[in-house]
Image 1 (spheres, one colour):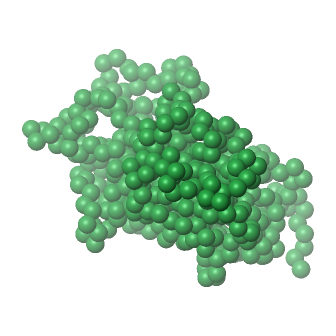
Image 2 (image 1 turned 180 degrees about the horizontal axis):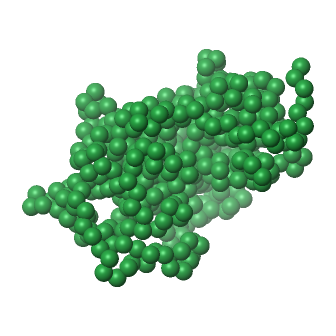
Image 3 (image 1 turned 60 degrees about the horizontal axis):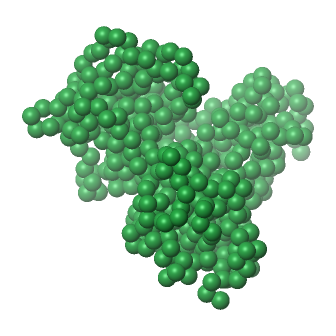
Length: 479
């Protein structure tokens, strides 16, 4: 049996880097960039955990994983037990281990991070999930006895998936309605293959089916059936709305309606969901030129930049009105983009898009910016430098400046209270909306946020739905 390490010895262990593809190679393929820890690396990294008596990392996790407990099992090489600990709180660990911003959540409050780099909690979660897949046998929490209640989940993104899993485990009959032809929401249409392989999403969704969740793709709630009709004609006892933030924002500048201007949503959907990265094997061409500019510097913008590079663009430029320090992207994604040769133009904002006589993009006029006093977000406000403008030749420009709530369900649901931005208003404790029996969570409530925050909202809503069904409704509508 291995000797127990002292606290000092644990603190002296350096954080293990994540193995990854060489930047010069990965910039030309859609294979996953981060390759994951092997068992030896995972055990060594787990040994850095101090097993705090009051673990702040658990409070920093939106779904409340018992992080010290699962890491302790990894230390001992008990990967199956580690997985059981994780899945007691999170049924999508292979996804979360890849795309969650752990550096701003659990790892941000890790005690080891006070003096050294924090324990790589996300990488360890990914390792455990990948280890399970490598064994060929996927385990899921045991389903409780059937209740007879039926719940409709509208939208199969992170919030919907988490809510569906929790409700199925609690014994309810769950149907997941998805407008597109594949479930997964932003996990399949928004996040590129090189960050989150779609096979991972497919497997995680398949696990929900093993729990008894019914999938209904190509079903557009708000068109195929309204929320009220799900109650009246389909006999559901409760409904969860998790339709996300799929309405793209544009800048409203001259020339924005030219051919060659994409929203990030359209660009990434063509490439990811519709397999445009593998044209002509899949019949979805992505008409992109050799000089591409992406506006914005969040995670979605990083995905667009790196995708354009992999599609063969000779030059890929990021235009962002603030500096690198204010970039909202995950540091890991920003560093990966820099390693791959993306041309970052900080303190730069497009003010006009040029087009030829055929309305095809030919260039962009860029305003140089400077930072003033902090704005409402706490970041210094970008201010134009008078007279400091320049023109740049491009043939494609992608707007990655954010997105708003999808209005299809909200506009077709009478009595649903919205805030001034069009997001659904909910009770933060139960996630119930202004309509009894209708709950909501994720980006449709908060605005565009992270995968794990949406999952946390889905879990909270599942608890609220379960209590509503058992304590208020008491018996199924169809009974």
